[in-house]
Length: 314
Image (cartoon, rainbow, N blue to C red; front, top):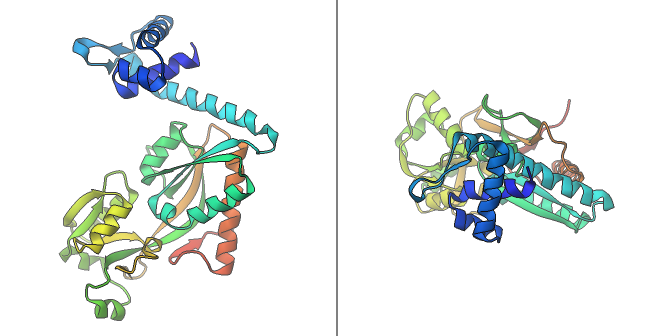
């Protein structure tokens, strides 16, 4: 079994089309098909069903796909690790982060790391926490900033809690400005009467909002749903509804106001995570150290975004 054969297999499995997979891998389609057949012969089972021009995975293919992805990711990690032996002059860090962090403090931390290690390539994937956990488990990320706690069906990860952030009710700042100035907080029950802008499925903020409303005894009413962070904030600015968001994403958005929920409010915990079965590369370890130092210094001088607190070890 060769890594190139596994790469061809994954490409076909994702494209569900031999010709498109060959184009993506920059190889002739007959060569790709030949390698897939050789892999099937070695494994003793067909990997694809090709009935009526439709390419689907067989049960053997379904079983192989996550293993192939992990083997390819581990091979890439090995290449990166060997390349880093030259004193971190080369390498790559693949980082996942939630949209609120990408829009907030992460840019400054990345800038510090890039200045210290200009030869290290940085790849950032933005997404909801549950999506990032799955991507991390597949070996497509080295580190991820995720929301705790992990769910029972999540893969085995090593997590370190580093930040807590407040969630606030975002609404147009022009909507009853005197009311915003007068009221220090809003009760979750009051959201029953307000249309809401809701994140797409896979966002932990969607689940946090639904859970808070249901605990208060009602189902929220959606004005629009399915957006990413920036889209949700723009929809709120346009007056389509309100949304429950991290307070730090409202920085630099004068068209939005954030009202805390009634004490004790809603907070969520952010952790930095990596796969339990794979030691992070030296480049990833260096980024983790840079990030934690950056957060410690920001907390000390008071420059963390509003509503964000560093978790210190006791």
